[in-house]
Image (cartoon, rainbow, N blue to C red; front, side):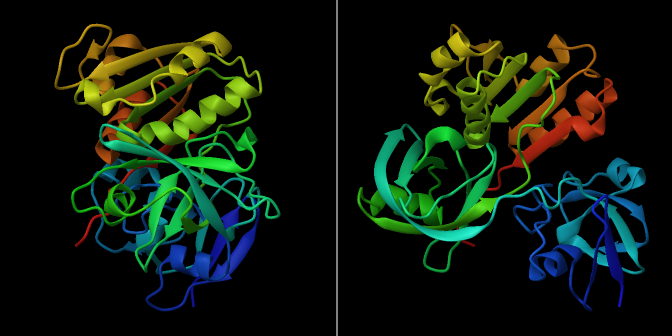
Length: 328
């Protein structure tokens, strides 16, 4: 039976036949990085230090040939053929995961996005890192959503729900859910979060990939963090943007430059083009930066390759991909 060794924490566990490394780790309650669990988002992309792995079919954009040549794998698709050594930082530096009931306190619909606010039980504390997500437990159709509010916000968190015609949870939010209703969620989940350095950061998002970055930037504002920030948010048309009132607060409290971009429309006060192209034009070298990318997986892959090609240390690239969950 192959053994997995995770460095630098020197964690060891066995993987059963027909079990992926991610499945084995989660079965044993290790908080391995993951999100979609189907090879599409890249959240579980991990460096292999030693050993041989067989991969189930996956999205080639999530793990490129270049990634594999550099030693990366996808834990959710990886079956060890030998003993394997992996590199995963901060494995034990994680908040306790709990299943909690929450009460809907507000539903704010802005064009195609609903900002869902829920209150936590006063006697059950919920701690999380800015950038993490929760799993909504709904009628056997669980859904993952990033937290869009700061950890300093106390007993209320917000989730940003994009409307999808065939989306199980978004249809429920639009057509059935009411203020006062009770939901259950599991969390906090995920390893996406602000690193404790003084490096300038570049935040890049599309769509509701805005949510985890809003959590991080709200937290930075509330803790008087003065790191230099470049914030790029891209959408197809102007109506895809929402919650823009927060930008004035960030401009007052943070050292931030904000670029809002439209890829299929031209409007005053918006940059034109895809966020990847704007980054390409605005920066010649990324060696001194940390990159935080959230949203469309293709965008994240393109930003990763662009920034690494121009000097970024791969360890300074942090991402959270968004995969819509629809009726199959």
